[in-house]
Amino acid sequence: MNRADEVLLAIPSNAACKLWGTDKAPTNVLIQTEDGRTFNVCLSEAKGKLFFFHGWSNVVIHL
Image 1 (cartoon, helix red, strand yellow):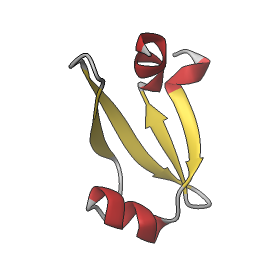
Image 2 (spheres, rainbow, N blue to C red; image 1 turned 180 degrees about the vertical axis):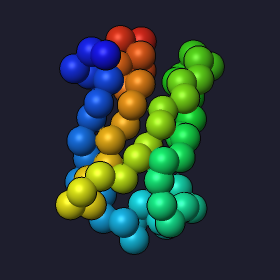
Image 3 (tube, one colour; image 1 turned 45 degrees about the vertical axis):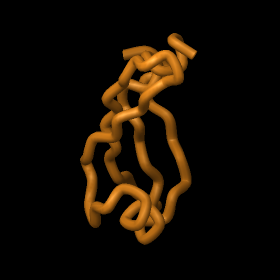
């Protein structure tokens, strides 16, 4: 796993619930780029109300 495979984002649980429609993670988030490519990123809740995005390096490399 590359360093860019895990990104920490400080998102409160209640905000994540509103954004992604889930109370608890993990869940999958699809990110679509302007050229039509789609990336599946796993979102999981961590201690301290931080969220890990796994597979983010594929999006970063593409962009």
